[in-house]
Length: 137
Image 1: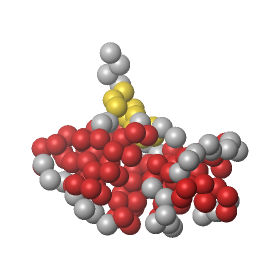
Image 2 (image 1 turned 90 degrees about the horizontal axis):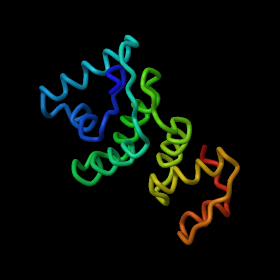
Image 3 (image 1 turned 45 degrees about the vertical axis):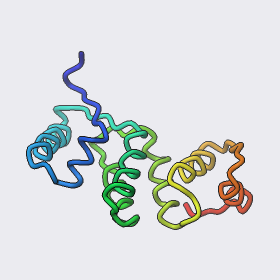
Image 4 (image 1 turned 90 degrees about the vertical axis):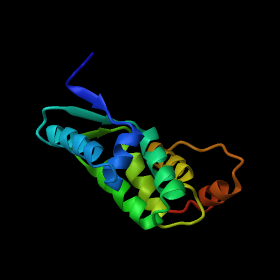
């Protein structure tokens, strides 16, 4: 097992953001510090970003703008290896500017634009955004 790499899960990052369990917050802060010093590689899978958004919204009832700010900071952190970083940043920017599309839809829309690949969907809101070729990005 590679001890120079860790995958941060949603729960660890959630408690880091909330700072609600001091010992856990301290442990995550220590990992982040090691990553900042390039002593540790931290991987953040894209699914973790979506789970964080969901938990902060549905369970902790944070404002959309606060959630987006927290996630943008996380995704932008250069000493973390964030899966699909560019697409996630585009999706967060798009989601900040619309109430019509969910974050997963914004991710798909951003991925479509970034890869110049069409989306096949039956989702009417997403179809409308695609048809308008909305350029929020």
